[in-house]
Length: 136
Image 1 (cartoon, rainbow, N blue to C red):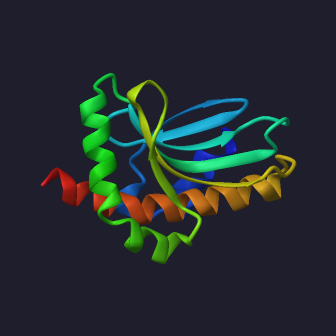
Image 2: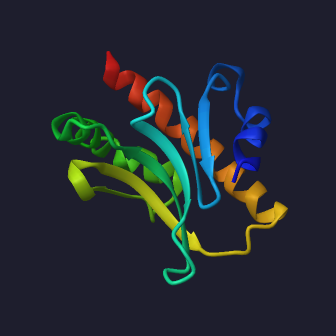
């Protein structure tokens, strides 16, 4: 998973390259201002057989998460127009929320990691401008 942010540096435009990241064997998180609001590629496990790509709102303040979800939801058709019809936006566990899509679980070989890095780059380029408009 650590290969994804290393590749993002080359896939994103200059104004989006200044991100921070953390990785574990099963996920990578990319964020700009607040680690609680982060993009994620998450290997959901063999049992589920899926990989999730998305934007998670995981602050300790459920109201802040809900407000971010509401803002993004106002733009869901714009997001789906760019990312595809399978993008979902929903409240989640612990007062968190997320905008996400899932993919069948491939082996995490270099080719698959490259595809997920490219997909995540498109997510970031689509959603960061929307989030920035919401910050006013």
